[in-house]
Length: 272
Image (cartoon, rainbow, N blue to C red; front, side, top):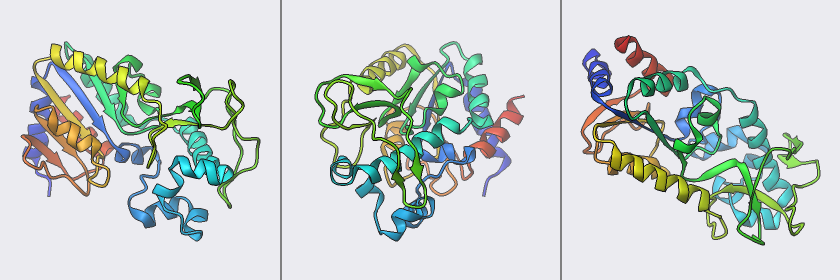
């Protein structure tokens, strides 16, 4: 149950901060219409062809899938690439940008999402950490080198009934081998992490320079707890927004058992 005091506490923490650290998991994109793959049944609802074949997320989101069944692997990731390209950010992104605009040190984003919606919403790409990579950047599956390739110009046609690519598979421009998204997958020893590492270095510098930070975490669950652990590890006041896992787990701050968009609108109404 959320009380007026909970929202007032959130507004107070935001007003007192000189820097906004935005941390976001899959739940952040739900209000934009993106699936969050919550549980096996949720994943299979989003991809019924994979559900019919009883293929789990960790099986298809894996480099092994590109080796054993590249048309199916690219069907899954090609569908996501097309979906993310066509999905506009919801109004919560605008609210966060407004809050950052009031603060002397602005905002930094740490997200496990690979959809690129923060960039699309106008956040500075130099102030975003994509800890699991992004679907908008490609690498060689082998990989033949450490070179990365932009996803612009890569077009894939997916038969959604079978979750299979029916267009030519994307190929590495250097060796002709198969391309894959530069996303850290399950059991992934070939992911090229240099962009994420550079992003993390910029974040660490910003954290060193910013004294009063408020962490606003949205849609970060316990199943893959990367974002939750990072949010708490910063050691700053935390606003945790999550409809199913709102507990602060010992952190100081406030929690709201709501979706991201509803919570951000409610806090914004107080700040106005």
